[in-house]
Amino acid sequence: QKEVEQNSGPLSVPEGAIASLNCTYSDRVSQSFFWYRQYSGKSPELIMSIYSNGDKEDGRFTAQLNKASQYVSLLIRDSQPSDSATYLCAVNDYDYKLSFGAGTTVTVRA
Amino acid sequence: KAGVTQTPRYLIKTRGQQVTLSCSPISGHRSVSWYQQTPGQGLQFLFEYFSETQRNKGNFPGRFSGRQFSNSRSEMNVSTLELGDSALYLCASSLVGAGLTDTQYFGPGTRLTVL
Image 1 (spheres, rainbow over the protein chains, first blue to last red):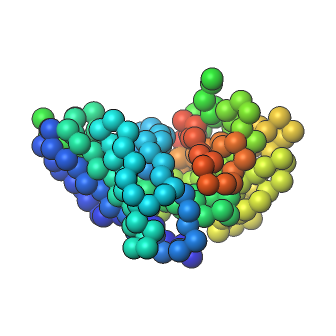
Image 2 (image 1 turned 90 degrees about the horizontal axis):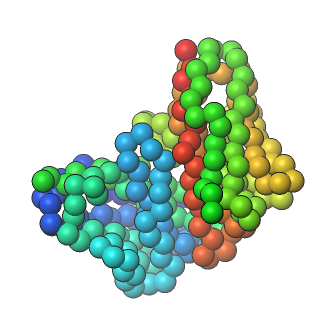
């Protein structure tokens, strides 16, 4: 059974700070990694995808992947109240499905 | 380009009934996946379809079934509803459902309540 673990949270950060979200996965063959954001009562929306070791930046978001450590993270810089949501880590390993972590709820304090 | 659409958005059923949910993928997407989301279990994979063929199935009882049509639209059916089936049912579409860069995009979901 493939497992995806996320830091349990909830995570509370002041506005303007960096929010750091972590995710580990159990299956070494996993190749594609995704971060989705889910607002309360809404469906998940894609924030970032990452496939290669290293960092990938998109605006205020940076995803980091370390396949040797089976670790993927998401940094949210200059956090805004609109970033308050649950962040889901997802892993795709070629069996036509995504495995999701339980999610980390982030609250940005104004 | 229109996103993934799901109908209906909300459903209330009673135990023992059956329900059919519908999903229309993003134009050009041929893979459709279904997920169940509950507060206790999180997002759980139900099944995935591509070209009318089920390629993977999650660990759910046989009461949960699905199908895909030639236009890539998909339906899922839950028979003999139980209270525990109350959940948000999410459909996601992607181009081919496989490959390094294939990305799943979610629809708004169908909120099913079983009384």
